Length: 269
Image (cartoon, rainbow, N blue to C red; front, side, top):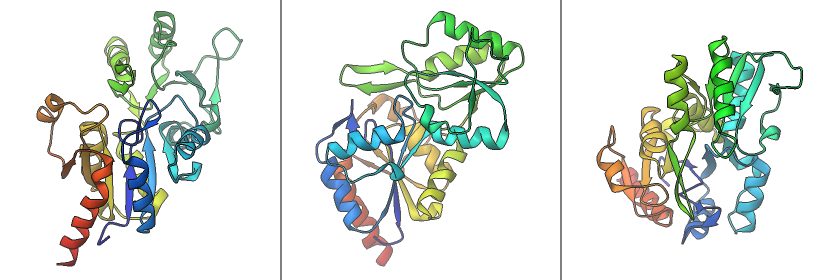
């Protein structure tokens, strides 16, 4: 489709909500696959490992496998291996992501493990109670680095908008007087990893997301064409107050094949 050779796609709020396919999403992804475009599902989801995500999506009819999925935990593991090799890490996360944290040494409170070198913050959930957050605060005060998989404030489920990590991370940063190192979206490193994953340059890729800041504008800063969908966590007021303007806005992922066709036609003229 013209100069576009690959599509980077957020999952939650774009393809699914609470893991249920959004209307037309399965058919649209099949059409994109049939056009021969590279596909990477890039997600800050930290509640499931890659294989589990792929299984749920495939069961719903999406033509994907675990190899198509790039998660914040997997990128975090690579980041820690490069920047903190051998570090002892305390993990604050909701969900089992151990499989995607290959090579990361996780220490646990009350087991006799040595104090952590790094506090790694994943996705929010019931585990983010006062005791856990206060423990992380103390560990950072004592010198541990603070690494967060993302700083999303909320996400959409079938029960409506729910608080996410960013709502807690801001307070932790302020209290400890540090700034977290972010490994997932919107970090530039995450998009570099995604582009390497599909083997294309930034100008040959399109990023589709429902989070205007972390998905779309962050991708645009990395040189990738940004497409905002009006599904998931999209809110008109957030769109109006954003720090920039998306390259394209569509009603849903179902409209993406038509947009890609238009981009191809423009590139050929």
